[in-house]
Length: 520
Image (cartoon, rainbow, N blue to C red; front, side, top):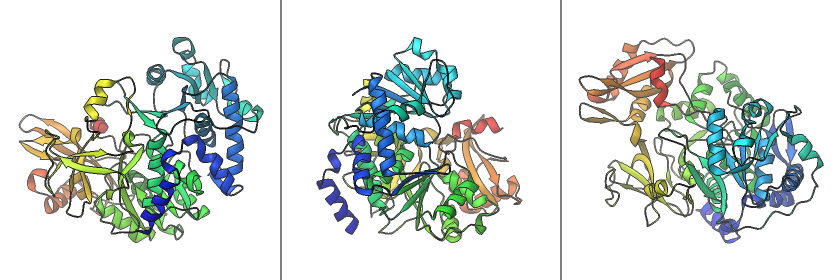
């Protein structure tokens, strides 16, 4: 309860009216020379980040980038990415963070669709897309590092020559701050429009739910271009938390970072925890500084949460979120019961309900599966330039469809069952891959598992499991199937099991179920 009281104090002191561009100036004033960011052997104080973002903002303004202009960020995690993000926000321009795995053709679609005027990237990634300056509204391509490229500007030069002082442009917190494109699994990607309030409020609530304060050291390898990674970054700078950031996920490097920097809280997706637990040297690392860990992006099998808690010595708290919410929406809170298997409870100023998957006007009883819907100040403004998709996603009364199947218990703890589109229909039965994955993850030889549908002449579809074993572990497909028969109803037992070396994942580490068939 104390954290709710404190958070209400933050709200009444302007959190609802704060913009992204105000985050660093206020943090620098309050935390000054405290270490704000640790990355790649370098560290930056809040004052240093404030100066760097001011210089870059001035240089961008000199090149014609101003309020409302779109700025695309297309790179792996880096300190330059962080500086570019906040410099853009200070200008009142709109941030367009995109997945580093996008092809030049896909980058071209996004840049053209949102009307980007500037794009930050590396020289290697810039080379194939220089032509976009002739084909779109793109005026500037700015490359990180010391490498120069004809037709592109130098980030280092802009961050060195811009003036040290900059007054953030005053804009309303309800205005557009960010356009985040969905993965585009069906048709073209859609640009979720997030206001400054969406982004800042989500970061603040996330901090409150896990009691994150200036006394913490936060570590993540989540990509900043993903809303979960951005929420973690923003909450660190909002509340003076030292942010230890990795360029990309690596199990050993993540464990080393926890040990070296005495990290107190860590965020990641389930596969990150799976890989760390499977590291042969896991038990040799000193993880005693960790006080809590957080997981989101996909459902976390309870068996893996228990293994992590037992071996790492700290609890793991699950959450659920969406791009369209600027990050988390439901969370296990750090000051109440942590119910394994649940993604937690409603966050402050946020509402959720379970409705009939075919009729959104009908709410489902406690314990029944339906579609999760959400409402409140975290809900996006809509999809950029796509009114039809916006109407399909958000009802006239403001409730938004999540596309996730879920259920709720009597205490309003929510449980994600699966994505509607991932459900497997076999011989008339609904089978949810996430349920099977949770069970298979409990097998002592299993490091990671993905379950997908496979066409079947008799049953329409069958469930097939793709299993990665722990190093040195031995198990056959029959062993896994026999284990499933003990823990699952007969119709849910996967009809095929394949042992594989690895699973296809997104840049944020989520298992790509739609790509599992490529392992056949």
